[in-house]
Length: 266
Length: 294
View 1 (spheres, helix red, strand yellow):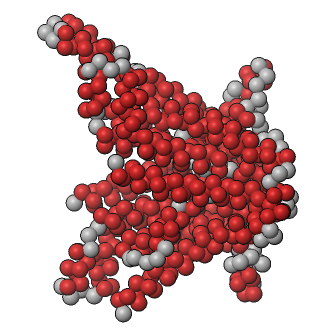
View 2 (cartoon, chains in turn yellow, orange):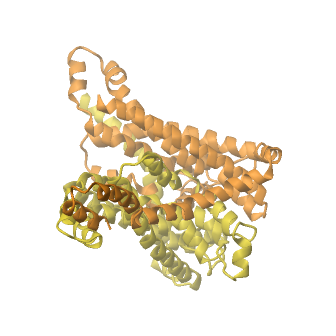
View 3 (cartoon, helix red, strand yellow):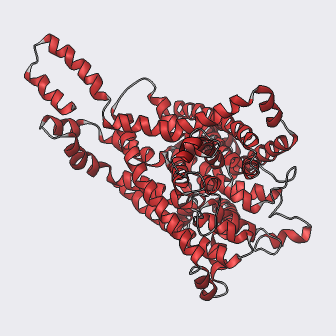
């Protein structure tokens, strides 16, 4: 009787997950390959598709290192210092997670767009930010800002500052302390943050879509390519790009499991 | 910089004026490279854009702001956004609690994979989610075909918006609740049962009360995410005003029509709502922590 009840609860839980998550998840792969590999291959070898992949990789390639530098600095500032407004600073860092991606994009348009604050200045010096790569990078930096700091703060707090102080009293420079003492201790937490940043940077759609102008083959990333292709009734192309992004998601989830185990292990 | 300081300290421990000078140095030393990078990056990436949005709203003037913010299209978009997100978050509050419970308390084959896959909405780009939900829940789709004979259309209606919001808000509840459930000892329930309480009583009086703060936190997080969601909804809905148009999509449409004022006002309303939700979530988390300390 007790066991039956357990099975009923498990059944309801798994059934709901199936309807909402798993069946849609499986459908990505089915839709991409149900006509065989050929339509998939022809979809992923078009010029627009390759340009979208390139742009996605470039944006993530700029965003991730910048946010790692910021995340490490912020995590150190928060974990190693007591100061008024510390809790507020932590809330401010989390802000991009609660702001709608479209609103984030809108803010960047208002700042750097033609009628924006810096619009006139940028036009004078001939730099284009909105509807071009820089704007898309800024939008991506905005939405992925909190990940690294969030993962590194608890690790730094747990580590304590004794080892740093010991190294300092033995005459190590700040730089040496960072590379030899801090980094080895926080490496798994940092990698976890990098993983989440990269996954979101490659997958961000809303904010980037607002500032990109979605010019196919020019300012369209993979997630934008998915939408554009679907709107143009190129279902094969849409699912071809979708399956690549879904694979990226699966790899991220698997690596997340591995890293989580490492973080808890240490 | 700080390294030099501590060495100096040990060299001249008794000299008072120097100690004072060192204190000033220490304060200045705090404005080190990490501080500089943190503050300037936050100003450049976060505060400047937010200020741009708010200033643009203010320059419109209160009357104009109010007129756009309460226009018929906007009001109907808020209604679709907030009501649909609220229902989705509530349903996920119940189902997410059940899923977290099953994942923590029971053993069954495939549990590890299912547990990991709960994060799918975090890992899948929203446009991919929208594309696949629109396909699976369309009239001829894997799931939609079972609803079509009853005249229920899901994709490209408000129900599609609802399904997308269910999809993206589910992990928030499960992931907020799981660690709390893991901490909770099953002895308390066993004690309650052995003292003659029924299962129903044990659930309502023993299990649920300490779980309430994390459940509500998860629901608020899920609601906040669902209200701001754009990518999956824009693909799975038709974006028709007064039907299934949500507020973030309206912001995008206004921008596309070069109606900067319209986009700014509705964007500001969304920003204010998310700030209020952030505050609420912080309060809920504090409440939950008080429960945990006990």
